[in-house]
Length: 249
Length: 249
Image (tube, rainbow over all chains, first blue to last red; front, side):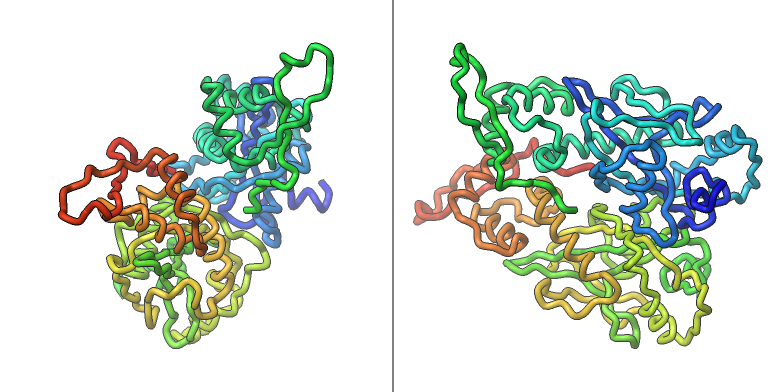
């Protein structure tokens, strides 16, 4: 184990981390009408979990979220956004942590830092899962995309964390749309509607959807090119160049 | 000092609190075109601060926020909402905490729990300041409403916490409007516009504002009563009875 490992999530001793504070990341993946979530499986435990970790004692919490995601899944350059602090006392459950440590040949004392109560800061992102190829870290057997509606049982309150992240994503989709960078440069209203329907998990009425999207003022219609039988082709749109809609929070 | 005091914010020893985790509350007060913020002044220090505190080791973080606000300001039954976790390393500054403890006759050792790095969970609320009468706790000289645009210098990063809370309030006002419970039962479009203009700190165009508000689908026009010269009186509105718009997050 090298020096750097002492500050990574595989370090059982907990040196250099803020006590009691965790990070959990919910990475949604969209492509072609499918919505997935990124999960890790802890080695030899059958325990599925969100990619998570801890905060160095001299590190920004937001920076820790990026580092944790990269260390645990090999994904980087992903725009993570805080969405909620999971701080209920009832979420305190050291059992899975004991199992994870035991599977690594370690029998922790009852007062071990990893067995204490943690408050977790939740971050989420939405990416194209065909362009984000994850890899497990050294304490995980796997790191894969799972269909949102067919998830395995998850450890602790991770299913609730996903549910809350999904609510946030659904609520903020209009505002985050451009920042997510999920659409090709030019797209049809149908492409956009498919994204919304997948994330909202319901069918939308075409006319109302189009009216609402045009009302947001972030779309520009692309001039039609002459392509022979193109008189029946749908309009193409792109995001208005002077709009970013990227929330800086 | 009674038993209960050992678990309150005035307790310098820190027994029974989660380490390194703080709560800060930004309570906005609106009335009649004015927007204010609630601030405490620590005893004999001249240090102004947001009402804040810590989390008991067996308490939900959201519950701690309500308890902290009530203990420190005497305000209760206020709907607090998480809005951001302030976790930058650069916010770590034990100097004001030292001054506060010194003013209470206590010279803390350098490794005192209150002098360590804290990550703070920010909560905000919007109330009518004529209906929310604060009172200082035993470690504060005062607890008062201050005009948002005329605040005294605040300790640590509390001004930035207010700025971030205000951004959140401005962004989420449509969605939170009914839950804030700030309007009288019946109100004019002008009353509503005044609330928006005060919180957004800009003039709005009357026709566009009315169109937008009606488009939200949360307003019902109240049938006009015959009141003599009332043909020139503005329409009255109330919130549609089947809408709550209260975000449960």
